Length: 494
Image (cartoon, rainbow, N blue to C red; front, side, top):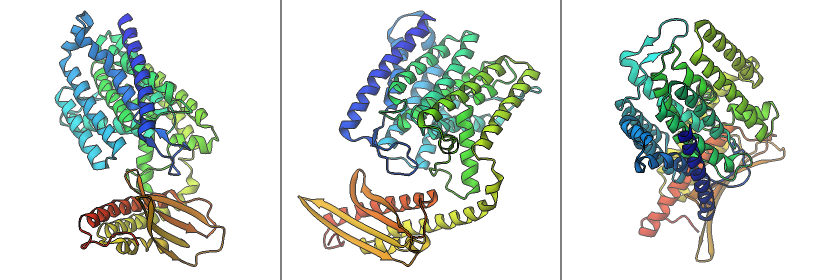
């Protein structure tokens, strides 16, 4: 136990120091998460990249084992498949997360890298080879072992990423998952997995000092994807070495909250015709705050309690017999059903408007696709405006404005386009989205409604964000072409 405590304390101290350093550097260099969307819970820019502290804290005691000649170090180094999997796969996921936090990575790139990492782990022996059956013998997967392993790895990585929506939530959820794996590994006398989980627990707590509400730094995708990766990989190892009939149900239950939230998001977006990887404000933690009228911190603490319940159920399944397992699963199913009802996920009164919302969202997605394609084909600023202009009628807006504004050598140059429509006479609701080249502002897209609405529909906001991104990308390209060959391209200023 002393070895585990030392690993925990080393990871805790390294995580604390690294998180503090990254927070200060991120503020100085402008690496912050802006509060520029209705789905954002925070109201001021917060430094990101806090995941670097988690990663550094986790690897510090493990790297020390390569430098210290001890029985624990020799035992750890002998686990070559585990070492290669954690270091190789972990650093690859960290690289992906850093790129996403700094530059932004599309869904295709994320899933491609995650898929390659999952395949690499499978080749190293991280495999799900049977499906648990608490009511009978387990079901061997055979050739389906590979797809099940890949789905588990990619699914858990993205589940932790999706649950990262409130201060301290993703870190706390991961901590409960770590605790489950540590206890199970300890009960089997698995020294290496206990050591790995102790290191991750210390790194998480070191980060949570700065991330619990009110947070002064976010973990970003670097941290959330890394936590998901380590938990997914270690869960496979703990379940594979377990002799219980419910082996794989244990990690599923231990990570019950992010898994349930991810499944609900997939169903919700499919039914409503939304893009599968779009952001919304309908996650469990969002509904906790809106439906149950909980504060930010209150919602996180309630969800910590739910995670503790999932953890106790997971540990109970590990030692339970068939009848006890059935009772535990039934009880947890009732708890989840009651929670879903309280949060409005099972509200049948809203079912009537689902089909209309789906049709509207599908039309909106088609419109956004046409608009963004036209924007990317634009040769000058007038073409960009002609591509964007149909949004006014499609969104039933009273006013639409697109402005480009550049600051050069102390002077301000700009060009504006706008259109007006008769669409109501109520007090206007205004939404303004920045058109940017990275962190540099190039102008804005401004839209007003006068039909009496008090807030923008999230699907419409997402559509406008996609259009603003496309306008920013094309404006950047056109300006670069204008500077390279002023005679060939009409510059976007007047």
